[in-house]
Amino acid sequence: MAQLWGGRFTKETDKLVYDFNASITFDKKLFEQDIEGSIAHVVMLEKQGVLSLDEKDAIVKGLTQIRKDVEEGKLAVSEEYEDIHSFVEAVLTERIGEAGKKLHTGRSRNDQVALDMKLYVRGEVVTVAEKLQNLLEIILSVMEGSLTTYMPGFTHLQKAQPTTLAHHMGAYFEMFKRDVLRLHDIYKRMNYCPLGSGAFAGTTYPLDRSYTASLMGFEGPTLNSMDSVADRDYIIEFLSALSTVMMHLSRFSEEIIIWNSNEYKFVEIDDAFSTGSSIMPQKKNPDIAELVRGKTGRVYGALVSILTTMKGLPLAYNKDMQEDKEVTFDAIETVKNCLELFAGMLSTMRFNAKIMEESAMKGFTNATDAADYLVNRNVPFRDAHGIIGRLVLYCIEKNTSIDALSLEELKAISPVFEADIYEAVSLKTCVDKRLTIGAPGEEAMKEVIRINKGFLSQFWTKESEKF
Ligand code: ARG
Image (cartoon, rainbow, N blue to C red; front, side, top):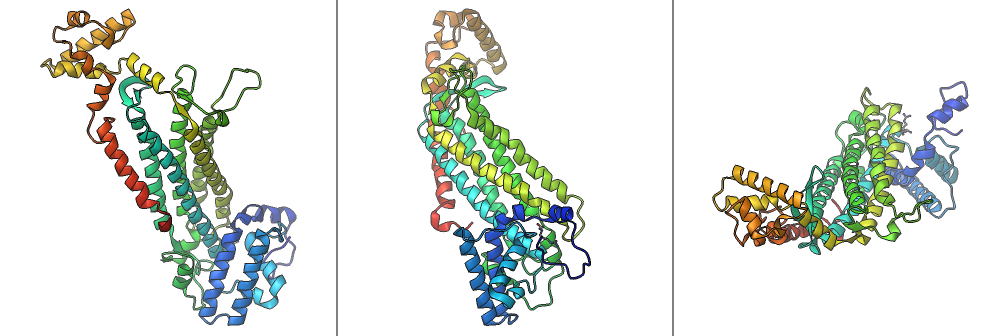
């Protein structure tokens, strides 16, 4: 049991109480951020004349060495301490003596942990955005290669109208693009530094909060010290964005599971991303897609958990907020893993163009276009709808498709049909006539791909890593 307080206490902390209160088992994940924040803090304290140059140098050197030793495995983060802040301060003082005890001047663990968590989340916002970028690039390359890969589009999971694989993939591109943009928004809104807020009322030291903020790449200091130690909105926003990412991944997974089934065979998941059954030798299961779909609930859970923790809290800091960490860490790791595995599965998946096209030809997906054919020849739409309905029924009875009927059979149902009907209801015509921006027609899709390439290059050149 090692803690930073005790002066006003006459009894030892009960062991159960100590363990219940301690957070080192999980907040040790904030080690890097704790060191970074402490270095910025003491550099500022020296600039402001609160610490001497020697003291600052000794502390910075000590902290840098501790970071190095932990990184190199020469120093283990000991779970004997209450939290990561106590561990760092204790090791520092042990190593450099008196100066170490000055590290916490003008600081409380309330603003310290607010900063550590913010630095951590900020870094993860960027990492998740990079993983999304990678996925977007994979989706875009599938799109480029599938502009004329015809497939049925569905509503109510019933074949509806023909589309292309590029168009279907493009829907996911838009979803993940919005996810990336959400992360950009969150980054901008959260990028203000809480350090210097003290326990909640600021401090009496002449701190230069703008300076510390700039040392750590923040836009500036937060503007209310009470809010600074009590704010976890950015975590909620991030978990909400991550929940949306998972919802998108889960929908995509669901489609891949359906497409990969024996009944559909639209895609084949690579062996490296499939698993077998212990009893049924013939099985090749889409476990990765199922797990991604399954893990979605866990990320939603993290969001609901923090919203619930925060809902009744009076200002300013309350210990309840320690509960922000484990679920957030878990949700972030989960999403990063899912994005990586999903990207691997998608980039190695084979699309069965022939089966997709045959499927589009079978399910009367050209029925709307057949009705439009009649409308273009002066049949009122409602009548055309009825005629094609009867035509579909006739086809179902004969187990055939509209384009396989003879012209006589077609004319028997409506004399308006002529030989050009076959061309009018071919998959290619059905798709290519849909040329408004956002539709599957080849030229429209090419324009969308051009715009989206611009999106990727605008946001994601390596030099402009800063949001
Ligand atoms: N472990 C605490 C947390 O995660 C750090 C802040 C503790 N502050 C305090 N006043 N006890 O929130």
